[in-house]
View 1: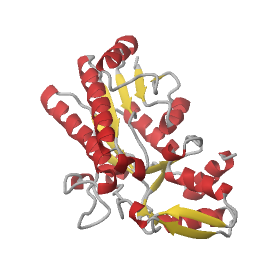
View 2: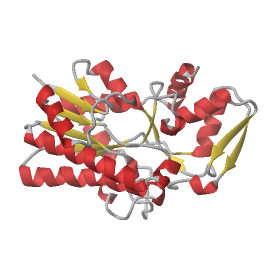
View 3: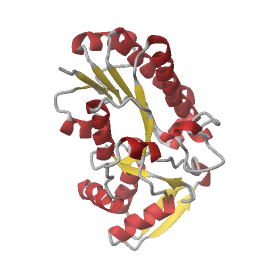
Length: 294
């Protein structure tokens, strides 16, 4: 019988996983994964056969730029301790959940494939987070090579969900924060940056379903997880306003907070592995989130 441990399981993706993997063990801020002793105690208690590693220190561009060492150190420690414990406790399957932030800031052609990962440094606006998550990809490959494990990782695009944390602005994902601003605005919508950067957005429940497929089918490949569409921030804001019948003026400020201009990734490998998977439409997903905002 599989014993599944989900780190960072109290977050947005973890909440979706709880619906479809109800018998797994979910940890959150109650376990400090930066502390080796705490990680050992966790593995001694759960004795997992499978680990889904969602845990990460995340934040917005401003916080990433203000605390780069903190973002790097915390994520490196969490990743290393969880991966090391997985090997020492003979975990059969470890699935690391990364982010498209690990990809180079600029490449010659888009969308980026899994082979483009090491063609350049991540964007300067969150370089330490990007490098820390990229290091986990390196660690997993190194473990497989040296120890004969068959661990893998997924690289999802920007996520959103009605299960996001609506109380902490700095930790809200973009679409959640955008819809909350629309709900609280009256005629004007103020956003940071220029609105020009391009992004892919995915409903977090879709990622949880793909993670379950990876576990159930023992999928060993590393692959991007993203729908094919790619919208600018401004297009996304206008789409949300139109879908919600709001005729607001969009005002942009602080262009230095644009972040990476584009980081769209190819879904070709995903389609080869899970050819019948269908993503939730943005229109449907936006209405789900907006309906939960008080």
